[in-house]
Image 1 (spheres, rainbow, N blue to C red):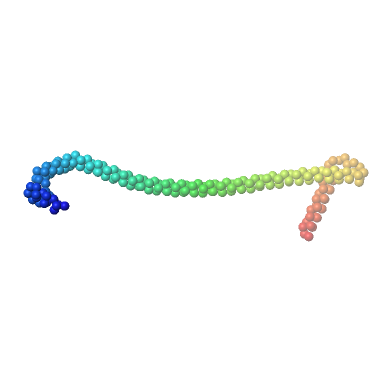
Image 2: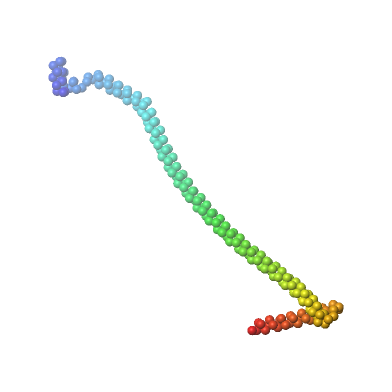
Length: 192
């Protein structure tokens, strides 16, 4: 296409081939001057703002990254503290369970001891009561047997025994003989 323009330009006024491609020097000068003014204006006013915005953006990104790093570190620290607190709580819970088990064992042992003491006291009281009732029964039996023996003796003799001391001695002697006979029978039974 350039080659087709050259002959046309050559016919119109005798312009050589470089004039078609290159603009006139005045236009180049004015274009260069305008370009220089644009570069100066852009360099003086626009570039500092662009650089300031880029620096601010870089600072925001840097601050965001450092905040993210701090957040990760804080999260890791919180996780370590949580684990430490959980370990301490587990240790404390184990100690509490151990103490509770020891107290429970102590309470059970004390309750068993108290129960044994109470059982022993009840058995002793029952033994004393049995002994007292046995003695009361012996005295009552002895008195009843003595009265029966006195009545029997009165019927056999045919007279009423008026002397109470004599009656008491007869009854005691009769009971002693009965006890002696009962003791000798139990010894014989033991030997068999």
